Image (tube, rainbow, N blue to C red; front, side):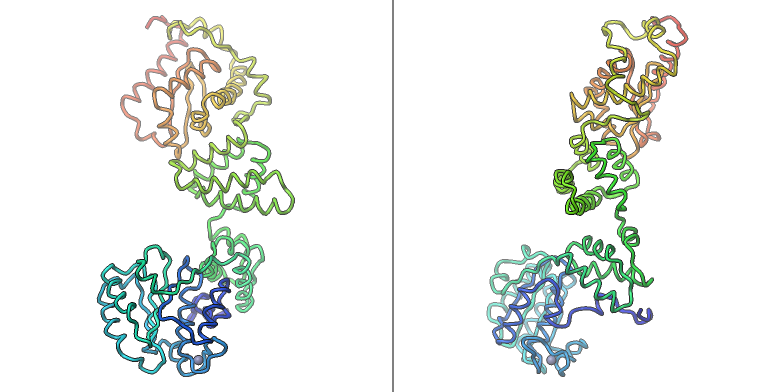
Length: 494
Ligand SMILES: [Zn+2]
């Protein structure tokens, strides 16, 4: 372990110093190295690619290589006077400009004045402009004038994460190199090498996980290793914790639920993740990735599931409600939930014993007789109620899938002619959708078939307890009172 007082980040300490040390960009690096060795460099390079893949490292190596006094097969020696000066940041001939913080035209104007002078002590004056796409239009115009007639001693190295934002007039004057995201196995190898050098016990599963989550950016992977490595040990659990990833057991549980077509289980996991504010997109990615691992070790039933999870992840960006979108996909994969609580042994057989719909002609409130007749003993009713809700959901699923999706996260209770459907706090959209009079009416019609032909459906949402309007409060009260009056067997013609 390093002394924390003068501790540089791992990324800086292990920054590649030679082309041969650049990870995952073999072709591009070989081309540049050959150009350096053969003295066939152009005057401007554009290095593009996502962050953390080595663009700036390559730019700096190139700056040293073109000025190295003891070039070794296209590699800078990193020992000669010129290399030393540049490495120490003391060379006047290597200028780094951060496009993001130097958007003004002034820097480029100064650059234009400077380029006329020959290098102070080197062969070539190198300008490295990072995030070059951030320069203003005016700055680009100024730059372009230099690019059009570049003095022979000048070398420009532009780096950008967004090459499409660089004017075509600039790109056309550069030799462009596109950096690739670095492969997971290459990142894992680097992690192991550095961990070994630093005396960090890095678990192979932890390295794989870091490599996977860094999405091709070696720098991100090293930042994670840096944050966890100070204890001298990096476990998979620690990575899971730091990155806020779902644990393996949860991912396996989710996949098992999908394979077993257990919508209840999968939906309750999604509800749990939402309630804890976890990122569903990240969860889908991890689940898909876990599915891939299991497919490789011989679980072909997971293939279509993995494919759907990957599609679903791609759809997250344009989903108006991520949770709803995932829930719909689960239901489509598994079929409707069968066992909402309380669990019923066999929905189908119990559906048969449910009261059948009666003609709807009777006005509400004149039905005291029917309730007295139909209402079973409380325990019996409990059983019926438990089976009626999943049966109702199954019916809604068969008829109107979109409405079923709004109902799945809900809890339902039935008492005194009132079916209360409660939505959890993170289901505001579900609630709003169900409140639509047409949807509400439809739900009530279905509920009449499965519970009581005269019941009223009341929707509630945990997120709205404080926002209950006076009107709604009155309505709920009226409904409750109606139930009470009915039960007391008062005059039905209120
Ligand atoms: Zn050198």
